[in-house]
Length: 267
Ligand SMILES: [Ca+2]
Ligand SMILES: [Ca+2]
Image 1 (tube, helix red, strand yellow):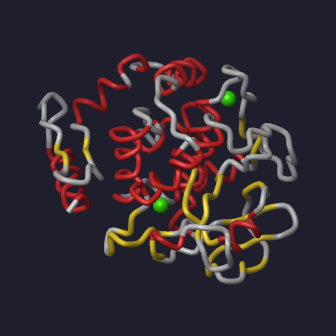
Image 2: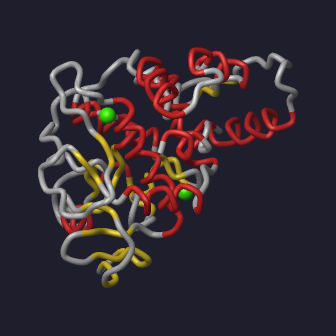
């Protein structure tokens, strides 16, 4: 039901004129979904109006830093909502494998799904601490084994096929996700770069154009992430997850899902 409402709301948004206020739609019952009206999204970014480049990045940092946080334990529950399989509400979709798996199979054993930090938590050494370590905008369900294969590698094109995750490739120092989530990965990385700028005791996370960044607070390669963002624009699943994080958990948004063109403006 939540999925149907989201799809309807986005269709409606596309048809609405910019000045036309639309009421927010929300699901009854489990609170799984609430969809912001188009007018709400544009007012959310009002302080960034007309800005480009570094000024835009700075304005977005201020906007998205006003947020709630969840604990690492609460991430389990949140991911069961944000990454719910639209075709089966008992399941979530794993990021890299693309497989639909029972929500109840969360855990640490082979065949379970666990909490993948797309911005690898060793890059800036934030671990699972509340803040970057629990930020739902870059946390996704993933198969335990595939999560281990990705490890803390940077992102780049190339390598050998990842066992158990068709369409993903890896070599000694990088990981290439399947085509359907290449843009998702790029936008998650760039969200983290804007959100975490050295305040609150956390590292200033920034993308660069290297691989093998190790424990530096950096993820590469920026040029490839920019290509991926263009190649795989936000779809209904990604829009819904942004809305659910905004309305239900953190009350902040990923600007690059709402405005993919801002990737090119800032980087
Ligand atoms: Ca995608
Ligand atoms: Ca930063």
